[in-house]
Amino acid sequence: MEILLDEGLVDAAVRAAGDGEGYEVRDAVLMRLMTAAQASHSDWVTRIARRKAARIMDAGDAGSYELASQWLRHAALAYDAASRFEDWSAVIESLIEKHSRKNKLRPLLEALHDGPWELMGRRPRHAGDCFDAASTLCHG
Image (cartoon, rainbow, N blue to C red):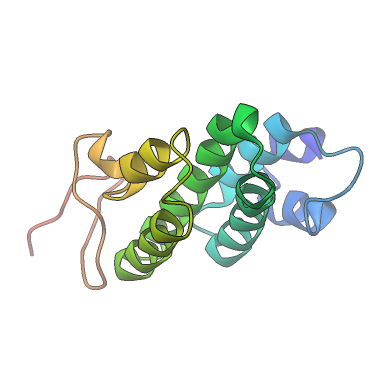
């Protein structure tokens, strides 16, 4: 899969990754693929990233909450790439409510509430928005 990514063959890499559960798919490689595929395969990215994060959060694995947050960041960026900010808001609000008593996790989820795009200094994409190659809002 890494070779496919290196060659820019994102479609083939997504097919090779499948559901992201293969023993040979390391987290770092899968996250690299998610970054490359967030616009072209946003549904795949959100499904896999949310599942990976849920396993950690539902197990109460406090030592891995930062990893769960990284998975959810990939999901948020894929929702953004698909102009589905409202869907992301519903997802993260539900997770914040569900895990409200997990004191180590809650701040990580709250930091993702407005989306990682806030950290990148821009607003989320909404249906109808236009972005140029530099990801700045087009006016027109």
